[in-house]
Length: 456
Image 1 (cartoon, rainbow, N blue to C red):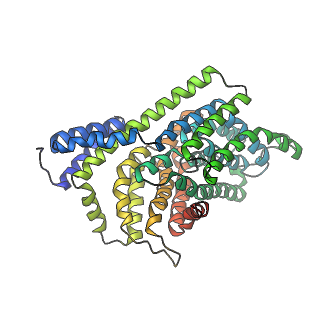
Image 2: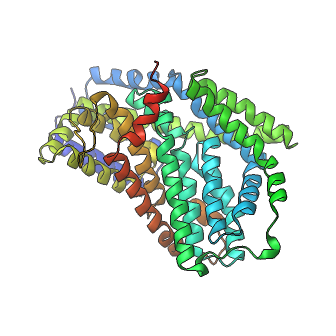
Image 3: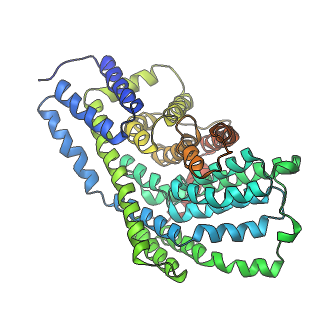
């Protein structure tokens, strides 16, 4: 029999210990996993030891998780094929003559890339090497240029196919197909907000984003010719998302189709070599192993916390505030934003969703400002998309936002970290507005899944 400790002190000890280990620079997976084993030994019992295999093994055998390495491999292959460079060239030739056109082209390119790769890092780094120098050469305001790139890159975690959506679907036991379809409109909404913000600012103050010189502009026929370079990636997007939306294939099968399509695209660009395949496979192995180890560690950590009464403690604490349902949701959003300043999204998802989602299921969301409310069955899907929009802010929020450091790693030396921090601020506000819109108007999330699955 292990030691006995009140849940209040155990919660402080567990999450305080996690914070200390993370501040020491230890990887998230090993922090949560080692703490889970330590607390099981100190405060658990023989029966609790069964939790180790009972929580880890289902993740090892979950069919939906096989989409994670497939989509990551697809992203790696497309990156090697030079698709990102070609897409940006096509879009910037079309929009370069407008004020702020290059920044808008960057956001639109990132939106299309998000629909192909489902991860943030690949698009952020590659677009940082291509788009940022192009904007700075044409005298764009550095903060506007960096901000557009940062915000556009985060769309990879929301617009399908999204690796985050796959992980959430597994943890929340939510239909992955519904989650992917439900994130389409919020993703396009945010992309449109970014483009509108950049355009309005540049028309108010043209010095922020001047159009490209007349000598660099091309005629309409040349623009049409350039579209051929974007044909293959657009067909790949339509194919992967289309087979999911129409119901021809499951998301996992669509990931396999997309991976095969990425091989075809790479071959048509004459870049399909054994070295390309090897590099993409190694990238996939590293990224997938990182995600799965965080899975194993965090699920044991949260599992022990729940077995010791942690979920009841958190539920009573949150509901004990007396806040109405939307107040509880706002409190959760604030907690997620705070965690996003310090933790990786995988860890945040695995630590919070098993605790927050049951609380939300128990509440009645009757709608705000006279708009329709939610059916209880819609809450997991609705919250999943809101969670993903919130996590975009985590990628941009100092001091440890991943996108900030992705961009700094490829930015010119004269672009300081302070400049990048300031560049992210207005787009974090736009993302917060996006979260608020999805909360007030749940149909932004729920309408398309209901239409697609109406006959199901």
